[in-house]
Image (cartoon, rainbow over all chains, first blue to last red; front, top):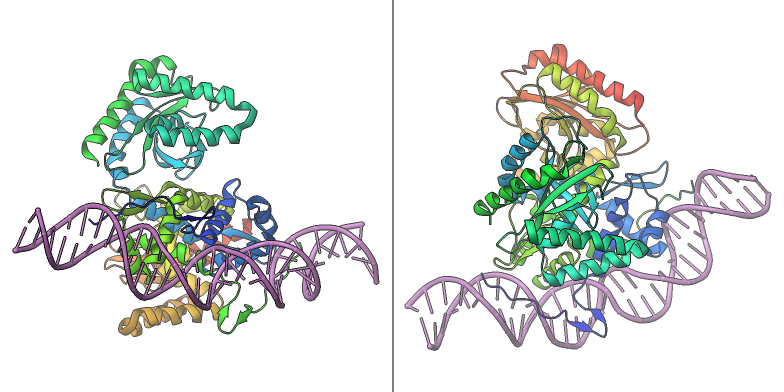
Length: 265
Length: 265
DNA sequence: AATATATTTCCGCATAGCGGAATAAGTTGT
DNA sequence: ACAACTTATTCCGCTATGCGGAAATATATT
C-alpha cells in the first residue's frame, strides 16, 4: 500500500488548518447525551458544549435533518435517533478480534461464574465492546456500549499499562486535570496497578470502583497497530476474592489474551 | 416550555444557510462503513462519498484526532473506534419505550418461538433497536444495530403505514429512485401491505425478504410526537405459517402494541 | 397584561474549509 | 536498481461558509 505518513499538523499561526472545526462541534453535540439518557434542548447543548446559542441551533438543525437527532415538538427537546445506533453496530462488525474472542470469553465466564468483558477507550472512559455472562444470573449488568471510568477500574488501568509511554502520560495528564483534588489517591491506585502488571501481568481493582466489587484485567495489544483493548473479569468480592484472582483467575485471563494474540492480528 | 417552531429553511439563493455542510460530510464518512465491516482507506471514502481527496483527507484526519476513527498505519486504512459505539449506547439508553417493551416482547417470543424485534428507520432501512429471541435456538440472528430493507420487509412496511401521508410519499419517492426497474414489483408489495394494515391492523411479508421467511409487523406511533417505530415477529415459514399469523400471532402482536401504547408516551 | 424564558432568525464579517495541482512515500514491475 | 504506478498529503488562493451578537418571536408564568 502507498502510505504517506502525516507530518506535523500544518499549523498557521496556532490553528490547525486541517482540522474541521464544524465537524468536531457537531459530534460534541451528539456526545452531550452521554451523561444521562434524557432528551436535551438547545439550551442544554449550549451549556454543556460551551458553544453559542446560534451555533447550537444550526448544528441541531443539521443533525435533525440528517436523521441523527429526533425532535419532540411538545417539549422542544432532541433525542438520539436510530442512525446513531447503526453506526455503533458497524463499529462492532468491523472488529474481527471481537468474534474470535467471544468463545474464549464465554469459557472463562462459565468457569469463573463472573462476567468477562472486552473494552476499548473513549476519552477518559472505557467502553464495553463485548460482554459474556456466566451461568450465575445475579451479576452486575454492564451493557455493551456502556462506559466506566478509566482511572479507577482494573480494565482502565490495564489499558493504560498496555499503551505507549507517550500516550499514557498524555492521558494521565488529562485525568489529573479532570480530577482535581482527588488525583493523588487516584494516581496511587494507578501506579499500584502498573506495578502489579509488571510483576504478574495483570491489573487489579479491589473495591476501588465500587465497594465489594473486585476485578482483574489484562491489556490486549494487537500486533498490527490497531488500538489497544483490554479484557476484564470482575464481580462481587464475596465470590471473586483477591486470593482467587491471584492464584487462578488472573492467570486464566492472561492465558485468554495469549490465546487470542496467537490467532488474531 | 418556550418553543419556537422553525420556519421554512432560511434559504439564500438555493443553499440553506442553516445547514452545516462540513458536519454532514463528516458523518457521511462515518456512514461509509455501513456496507461491510471492513477497514477503509481515504480513496475508498472518496469513491463512496463523492467528495474530493483533499476534503476526505481533512475529514478523516479530524475524525481520527477526535477518536472516532482508528488508523492502521500498516495498511493505511481506517476503522470505526469505540467512541462511535458509545454514542449508539446513549441512543438506546434514551429510549424509555424500549425498556417498557422488553417484557412484552419476550413474552410473545416465548409464546411463538420466534424472535420479536423493535426497529426504527435509518434512511431506507430499518435498524433493530431491540430483539428478543424465543427459547428455540435455531432462529435467524439479526443483532441490535443491524439494518434491513425498508421496502421488502414487514417491519419496514409497517413503519411506512404508521407515518404521515407526506412523509410516506417522500420516502416512497426515494425508494423508487433507488430501486430503478424493480420498483413496480416493490410498489405492489408495499400497497398490498398497506391494504392488509387497513383491514387487519398489521403488515405481512410472506417470503418477500428471503424465501421461506414469513413475518408480521405493526407500527408503534408514540403519542408525544417522537419517531414512529415498528414491532415484528418473524421466522422460518415452516414454523410461522401465514395461517398461524392470521389466526393468532398477528392479533397478539397488535395486543402487544396496544399494551405498550397504554403505558408509554 | 406583563414579565420571563427559550429558541430562532437576521446579517455582516472573518475565516474556515474547499478543491485543484504539486509533492511525497511506498509498491510493484522489469 | 530504476522507472512507472498508486495512494495520500500538502500547499495555497479564493470564496462560500459558518460564526456570533443582537433582534425578533413564541410560549410559559405571575
